[in-house]
Length: 89
Image (cartoon, rainbow, N blue to C red; front, side):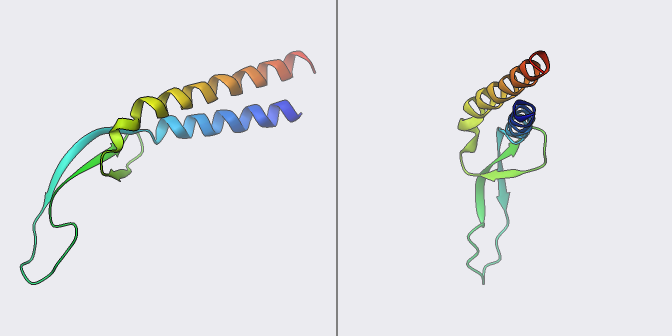
């Protein structure tokens, strides 16, 4: 029972890591009003998530490959735990 819970939790975290992995960067420019000092005025680089509509600010797309590797490793580890729990029960 314990291996099943750990395997399912690892798979869920791995899938979420893959879904929320920061994808490609997009440069967007925001028009500014002359009377206000808005910190988002001007052009900035935003990184979109792989599948889920999340916008990461800054240069997060550098972490795409490490996040993908960690997510896939967690999913595979979760599958191994689930298969071993089934064989030994």
